[in-house]
Image 1 (cartoon, rainbow, N blue to C red):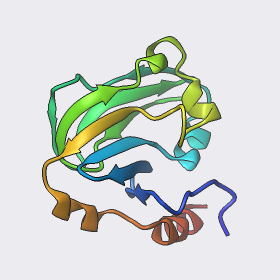
Image 2: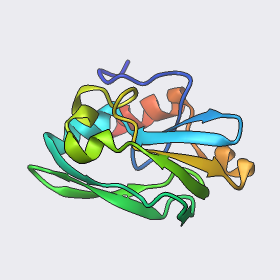
Image 3: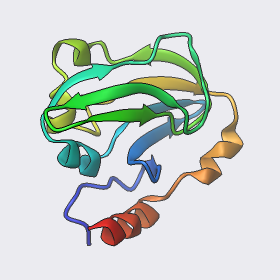
Image 4: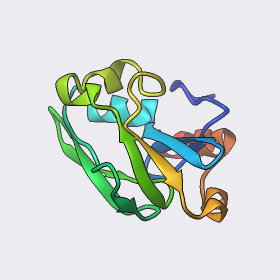
Length: 131
């Protein structure tokens, strides 16, 4: 079993983003593993509201003390909201990656893409391979 939190109701990417899908909206963020690997997050470049995003294309960056990482969109669609709190306090992602630390909400344009994402079980297997 993974030492990282992996909520069962989410979908995951191999690049360590998560998506909570509710109807045609996906709330997205980075996983507990990703925030742990990055270390203290100091800045997040949020995607622009109303921008069109493609599945697995970069939509922003996350800067940590150790490194800078691209943020990828788990699904294609239109950004309908971003978590403005992260502009002032990006460390929320370190403390609560699946809750208050969400990054953006996307109106999904291609629901079939959900099939390309990992289940919690598949994501845990991926973590066990990289650990």
